Structures are given as structure tokens and as C-alpha cells.
Length: 210
Image (cartoon, rainbow, N blue to C red; front, side, top):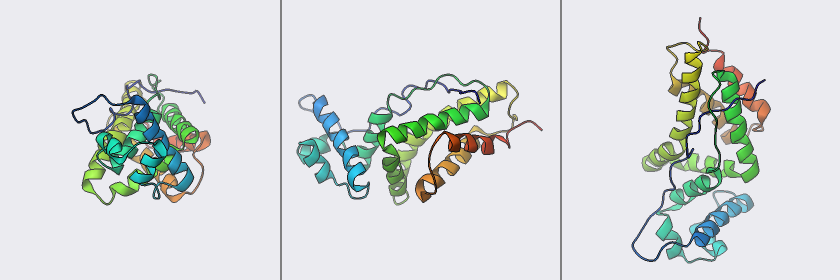
């Protein structure tokens, strides 16, 4: 199967959510230390066990330094995802929706494997269920950018007559996300290129013109 790519929506994630207050310029070294510490603690102890205090201690900064940057734990972990996913870029879609979706998912799964971000993302999704505010932040900052990429894939496929004109890009994005998220949250299998191809094939079967 041809490896396809999707549009370069730069960045894939919005700018990092943080709290800016008057005073001295922020230290980039402290920024990196905080985000590195948060991710390393997730790898060691799991998302739930990580506290603001533990991140500050691992990073070698005080709690005020951390809270000057991030209003709360959710903002911190959104920034963690942002930091390690920021370099991901996607080329223009080919018009083949199955290949394009498979390529998108394969790159995402490779990112998860390389960084361990899947635990952060899963934790944020679970947290969002308990708070409308956190759910809104998660949708705006992490979900909507991916939906725009899927929308570009569907639009390119529609121009080539590969999908029906009544197909909703949002519905396609929801179907893809539902399959992937079930595997992430239920822990029912690996996230790899084979699963990416299988997911793309299942979703695209219902999109073709009749």
C-alpha cells in the first residue's frame, strides 16, 4: 500500500497553554526541565501518580516557578504533549482516503512508541470526563487539530470522487478516533502500522460512492 501523507497544519497542536505573568523572562532551560520531568515521571509511575510537587522536585524548580507557567495539572500535561508532538508534520493528502488515514495513524503511533505520550493522552482523556472545562480544553487543543487533518483527507478524496459528497469529515474523524481510543483506553492490543491499516480500511469502506 502506498504511504500517504496529510497536510502540513503547522503546528499540529496549538501553541502551548500556559500562564504568563509580569516579571523576568521565562527560562527555556526550566521549561524543558519541567516538561521532561513530567513525561519521565509518567513513564516511571504512571499518569495518575504524578503530582505537581513531584514534577517540580524532579525538574529542580520551585512550585511557584511551575505554576507561573501552567495554571494546573491539565495545562501542564497538555504542554507535555505539545512539546513532544510539536515536530510532527504531515504532507498533503494524496486523495486516497484509506492510504492517507493509515499514514496519519502510523505516524501518530510511531510518535507514541518513541515518546510514551500515549499514557499522557489517555490520562487527559479520562480526566476530561469529570470536568466540562477540561473537556473543552482537550477538544480545542488536542482533538480539533487532528480533526482538521482528517477533514483535509476527506476533502481531497471527495475531489477525486473517492468518497460520497454527503460524507461528513467530522463523522469520519469520530469513527477513526473511536476505534483508536477504544484500544488505547481498554488496552486491548498494540498501536502499530498493521492496526493503522486495518482501522483505515474499516472506516473507508462506508465512504465510497454507491
